[in-house]
Length: 236
Image 1 (tube, rainbow, N blue to C red):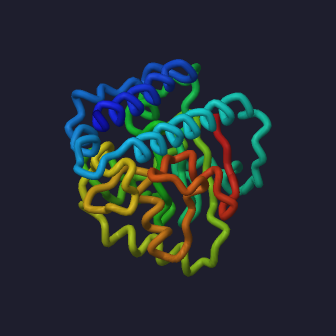
Image 2 (image 1 turned 90 degrees about the horizontal axis):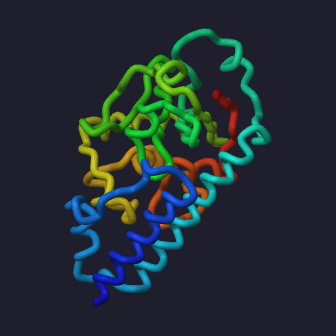
């Protein structure tokens, strides 16, 4: 009975995503073995399910807030980024976040991320990013300015050593496999990662928690809610 309620609450939360957002969030719970494994774990209970339900609703509601207030977001503009014509964007340690809205036809942003699209962070060489796709964590080309139509860049307000430590730790995780639902609401379980969990963990291991709502999961938009970052660039 508890497992049925647990699954039902998660289904309700993800169905709610369709009501306030887009069909891209309509996950098939039955088809995803990782999520089913999480739901069926021995200690799954109603309280846990309710907390997850509230977190998903909160996350998606914040997404709607960003969409509605896009033109009025407070941005501490880094003019170096705005004036550059390079395809790469950001400075070492900057967190790159794709942004979804109903008018965005950017299929890359829609298909590659989590409930609120995708995140990565800039390498010490700003032409590269440390990024997780389905093939695992890798050092990849930083082509975010041209790869995605609508993005935000947030910059942690931390000591430069924390940034260098986060990047160094990220390198130790290269090759770690991707899993979305398996560890989705167990953000400290890092045998596998999803995109924003990887970025969050790199900074956490370096001494700063950038999860802005402190939930069981860490979604890309959670970085926007942290008082330890500033939005320095907006595109789209």
